[in-house]
Image 1 (cartoon, rainbow, N blue to C red):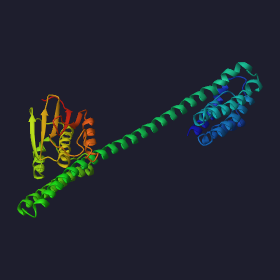
Image 2 (image 1 turned 30 degrees about the horizontal axis):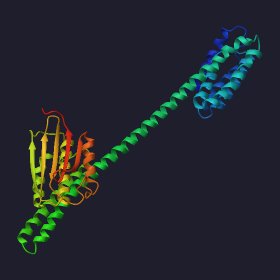
Image 3 (image 1 turned 180 degrees about the vertical axis):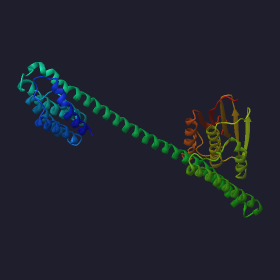
Image 4 (image 1 turned 90 degrees about the vertical axis):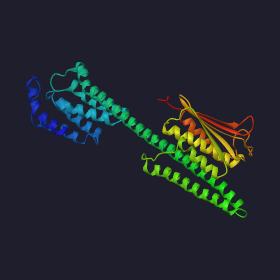
Amino acid sequence: MLALVLLGFGLLATGLAGNNQPGSRPVDAVCRALIAVAALALLVRRRAPVATLAVVTVATSTYLLIGYPYGPILLTFLIAVYSVAVRLPVRPAALATGGAFVLLLAHVFFGRGPAPGWTGVLPASAWVVVPFAVGVVVRVSRETAARTRAEAARGRAEQARRQADEERLRIAQEVHDVVGHGLAAISMQAEIALHLLPKRPEQAEVALTAISRTSREALDELRVTLGAVRRGAEREPVPGLARLPALRDRLAGAGLAVEVRVVGDPRELPAAVDLAAYRVVQEALTNVLRHAGVSSAQVTVDYRADEVTVEVTDWGVGPGRAGTVPADDGHGLAGMRERVAALGGRLSTGPRPGGGFRVYAGLPVGPAT
């Protein structure tokens, strides 16, 4: 379209330009042919910009050497220079444009009729320098925009991968907490049942019933967790501190008596904080059940003005309970720290001065309303 427009404009307007330039050669068939060659060469300017510039430069220089009037053909030359600058790196574009400029200057000194001489160099250079500079700026802008889009795409991809990794870690932690606690309770209840079965089978039935209930609850909670993964944002209600009584009853069936104390006025907590507090208590009690070698533990929940704290203490003397809990599988304690740290809270674990072990977590929440 551009080539055809310049062709039509050149054929129509060159004669008018000649009327205002006394001494120029009248428009004839050769003039029209040179205009047509220069304009039609632009048809391939995107695929072969250097060849296009060469053809346009030869046609334009010949046109000016013969003495035809300055006119629309120079617009065709301008477009050819711009095409080279916008499509080639600076160095080859500058070399091609420099050669075109030298050839264009031929008419300044050797043109038919009075030649402008050195006074014509500056006007002639403008037809080269201006489109070349504009083309370089446009090309650099396009490359910068392309790099920006590529970097943005890489950033989005990296963000998506990071979010996917974080979601996988979150789900892995949830599954660990659910399955680990359930299996620990089931294991303890199974040992009780095996111990009682030969002598007191009626009491073994109670332990087996507790195993059935615990496994069913663990499977239900696992189903909720995995269902959240399948449905994305459509999640069912997650566990929270309101389920501590159920957790206490489940552990009682496994032989661990848990005393739950609540300090302050209970209130609704953010879902993430509520879940983290519950999981810390659950994991701490699971470790007591596994490793402490005691039959009781205490849980204290303290609702403060700007945070909620949970504390789990026991009086156990199980193996490896000096300092940390090496009997833990390495994921539970790390999972507690990750949960609490993600919410800007604090976690401390370690032996108590009078014996036993203590897990303490403080989670920030908004002020009570």
